[in-house]
Length: 242
Image (tube, rainbow, N blue to C red):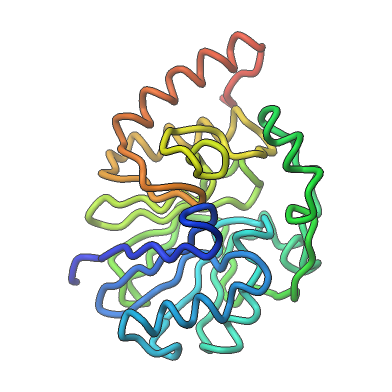
């Protein structure tokens, strides 16, 4: 199977909210942006010389509105099946975030007061519901989906066979990607569990981490950040799950 090319498709700001095309023998979209992002994503898909019906699948990394906001619209436009994890099914069925959105720091406390995290969108039921790792080879892309819980219960990441990791919100650029430095996103349901998931992905030696908020991150730099974050959590008495 041919190697996968990762094409970022920013939908808000320069890189504040990202979606991604994985182009191999066929094409898979990872994440769907905020509500109303669907037409922009379709236009950017077409700018790559692809037709909407060329999408083999839509992968939603987790149940936050800036990642699943246009999933139902894009399925209707492309007929591509939506793939997501069972842990966030209630959120998708409600069309809104159903959890408490625990902030990871001062920016999260402020961001939680804005309308976007609490927005509503068209609900949906994923066509493929995962509770374990799954390959994307049947959809023409040399990659696998891996559960990475912690940011939300149903968070998943996509690792291509060539080593590119589409990491969802395991990690982000600082201030929703305004700065090109590794940081926590505004919210984590379980910071220690998320860090354990991030370390598990780093153990797979990815070459690059593509994140939902910000520019792609170098794996070595993320490893250094993860060590500092581990120390910070332990100092606060927050330990990783066994």
